[in-house]
Amino acid sequence: MAGVGGEPRRPTREDVEAAYGKGVRDVITPGLRVLFCGINPGLYTAAIGHHFGRPGNRFWTVLHTSGFTPRLLSPYEERELIVLRLGITNVVNKATRVAEELSANELRAGGAALERKVLRYRPRALAVLGLGAYRTAFARPKAGVGEQQERIGSTRVWVLPNPSGRTASYQLDALTRFFRELRIAVTRSR
Image (cartoon, rainbow, N blue to C red; front, side):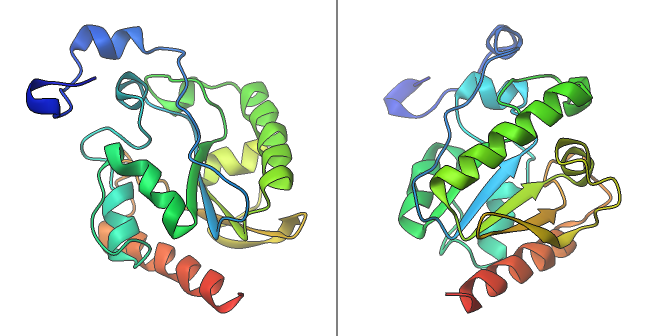
């Protein structure tokens, strides 16, 4: 979706509405340090075709402030994460207006598919960004934020707060602290 001079153009309202049900291509390769996993793409994200694309989503800011990236990246630069051995996927690759539109069955099926993906690509850590989605997708109703006892193969599993601007219960400093804790843990476990 290019605008004038090759700069990305903002999607129109029609573009955003037409993105309902679409997916976004994973940013993934074998041997990542961390595979970040959103719940599902929002409509804006699906319309532009890049993860965590909606203005106001704090994912890219938190990646930088927690030390995962040397500079603030934009969603359009998501492929640069591979060089840093980071990736992005979703529990359910189906765009909705809000994640609450996903059924428990969709989340459970997404959890099973995510488990297969993790076993295939073997990242050092999986970071699911959303406690409620994790609890449903992996049938762990008492899970909390942070590292989980369960592993997927040799992959450590973390649950972090969702960086969406709609998750106002976690301010930027708290999000940064959780993401930094993950970064330090995966750096130490080389």
